[in-house]
Amino acid sequence: MFSIIQTIAERKIQQAMAEGKIPDLSHWKNKPLPPDDMANVPEDLRMAYRLLKNAGYVPEEVALQKEITRLEQVLVDCTDEKEKIRQLKRISFLQTKLGCRRGRPLELGEDGPYYNRVVDRLSSPRKD
Image 1 (cartoon, rainbow, N blue to C red):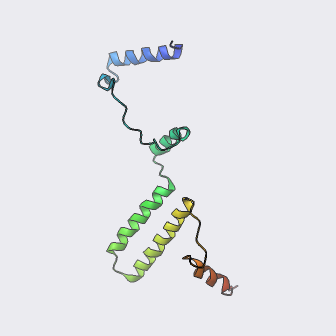
Image 2 (cartoon, rainbow, N blue to C red):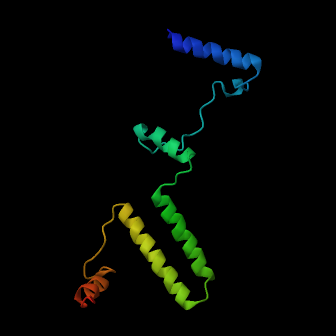
Image 3 (tube, one colour):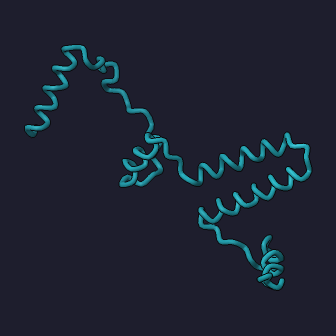
């Protein structure tokens, strides 16, 4: 049983098809829909994600990964040693930032990559 809104919508669609304002979609009849690219996104978030995607928003994790990949390509072609070191530091920073965004904690233990830097910073006297 159709509601009044469904009946009106159906009439408008039929009228638009008769006037040629919308294409004939009969070739889609009884065929499966294309796979949903947001099948892994929770159902209650899909509409919001589609709106953001259509507006050109890129999640920060995706932007970080693209930037890391771009910098790695720059590093391959780089011949200046100082520039290579600068790019490696930038890549390391972005990878750490990406890891934090994904919920991976910073490793500040003695075996972690930041231990010596933290100790040096804390043990050196401040210049005021």
